Image (cartoon, rainbow, N blue to C red; front, side, top):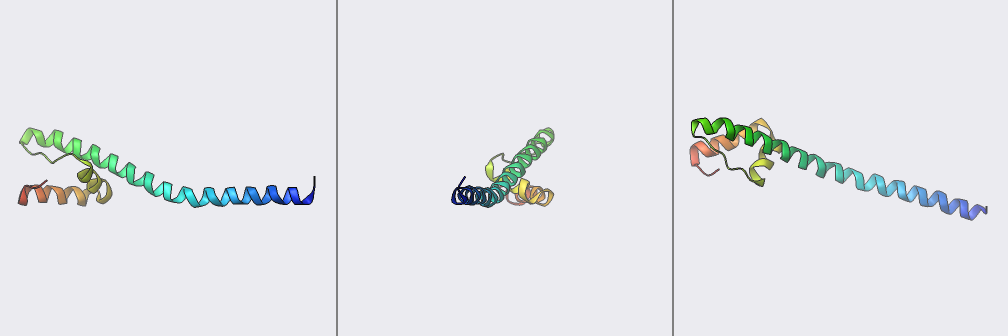
Length: 89
């Protein structure tokens, strides 16, 4: 093989590796946000199931799931406080 062909293959491999590195980091961030939202949705379903016995219900939608998924327990407490004080959730 000619040296130019080998150099072109090496350059192509380097470009592919750099592109994979560039695009996997944002994808990991998006996947983590989706996973947190799903876990938040499960937490809300559990809370609504237990709270249903006492007449307590928090709206189950994308926004509340994202708040609980992103903030965790403080996000859930925030939604409970908003529900109890203002009745808006």
